[in-house]
Image (tube, rainbow, N blue to C red; front, top):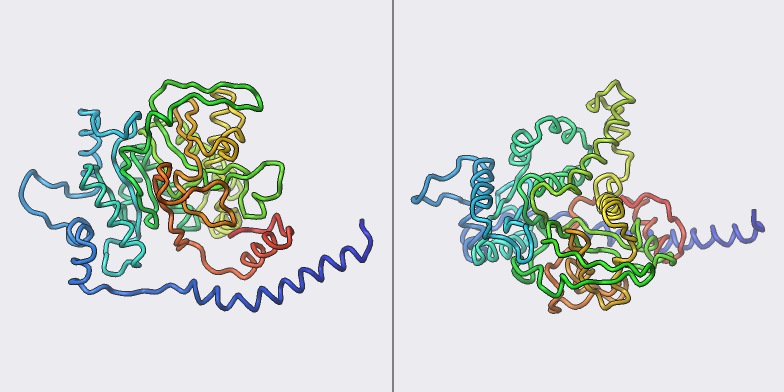
Length: 403
């Protein structure tokens, strides 16, 4: 134990920080208040014509018989993709199918940021063309009942909507394949071009001397959200679990990729452990409380998919995970087996000076997609916000909850 003066000074720093934090927290709360609006129909049709046509009304007549449900539409698209094999992302087996989720299709009630972003996705879908699916809450449960009915009750037992969203994006590309993007993202270039010949070039892990020169077509794609020196404390002070961490606001896969099954196996193992405490029943209040206590970032979020990918690629090809950093090669894409890992600029371009981590501008060719970070799932929590402040500015509170 150190001298009493050391601990006294540390807690003095915390106390001063708490005062400063409380002075600014009111403005944070104010900035996070949800703003609802209803956009007049004429404005909606003018500003977001594709939203108006394809989502808000969806009443196009004529032509072939239209599917009655989103599940029928999914099966039609899957049949088309299996029969033609033509509508694929370049150099890959990833079908050009876009999946997004929102709680409803009442577009006139959507936040403007969401409407603007989805409109851009629709523009690319129409111009490419690509299939586009917007899965609302009812559609998600239809999907579960069709593709994995045994998981429906477990899905319902997850206590947070963000956890349900995390799991659904994995499941929808596992069974249908395609590209998932949060509704606060939009593509900066056509998803059909997200893999180019330069992205497939061999690369070295200069620490181990290993050469990675896979010639397989890309069957899964992930982007990096955190890229920090592993020997430093930078990553955890910024709120990340891993120095090199994958993002989940966008990802892509061919249907049936084993890494997606491994993600679900990992989740089911955790759910099995919790259920075992309550006679196999996840629906009792005590099970809900235990699940709620778990960190969603490590249960279903970016830390979870990072752990799964790290284990999978180590098993398959002996990858040293931190070799994926782009800090020392100007941010190169890296193909490992059949998984493409984009540099931070791929799905997180245009970051500011603080927390840049090698992110290049929005107009850089490496930038595929912009994330506008609405963070609608995050409510305001004073302890969480103070923990963020404490980590960032004081280098303390490492193990405090981030949500």
